Length: 283
Image (cartoon, rainbow, N blue to C red; front, side):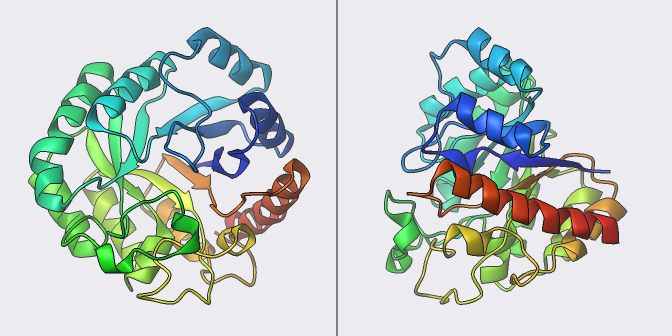
C-alpha cells in the first residue's frame, strides 16, 4: 500500500518549524520538503544546518519523503541531490527544465548519475511545457510553450525509454494530465509495470480552468485541494495505485495559498485530508 504523505508547499510563507508543527498536528508523519525558486516553497537549502533540520523533523515526528527543486540550474540541482542524501531523502522531484532534446541529452544525465552515486532517485514531473515564471499563478505564458517536454502520456513513455535507468522515474501530477486530456489510471499502470512510478501528487484543479489560456494557473488553493465537489474523483487513481502495488508516497498538494493565514492553510488542508481519507476508505 502507498504511503499517504503531505507537501510542505502550502506553507511557503511560514517557517520550517511552523510548517512541520501544523502538518504533524494534522496527523501526517511524512513530508516532502521544498527547495525551489520563488514564489514556491524554499524551506531547506544547501548550506543549511542539516543537523538542525533533522532535529526539527524528529521533534515533530516527521520523516522527509522527498525534496522538490523547481526552477534551479543543473549545478543547483546537483547540490540539492547531495542535500537530499544528507537528509536521508531517497527521491528528488523536478520538471522538464528545457526543450526535451536538450533535457535528455545534456541536462538530465549528470543528475541521474549524481543520484546513483548518492542513493537518490530522480522523479521528473509530467508538467505542461508552459515556462515557469514568478507570476505563474496568474496564468499566461501559453504563447511561450516549448516544442516538446514531458506533459503527455506519449512523452512520459519516451522519457523512460530514452533514459532507461533505475534511478530515473516519474512524479505523476494529475492536474497536468487532466489539462492534456490523459487518463491518470492508465499511466499509473504503465509506470508501475516498469518500476518507474516514483512519486504521486494527490492534487486537483479548478473545474473552470481555461485550456490554452490559464497556463499554470490551476485556480485558487481551495480549488486545487482534493474535495468532494472537485474535478477529479480521487478514489479512482488512488484505487489504481493500490491495485498496482505502489508503495511510494502519495502526497497531498496545492499551490495558490499566497496571503493565507497559517490557520486558513491548516483548516483547508484538514478539510481536504478528511475527503482523501474517505477516498481511502472506499478503496
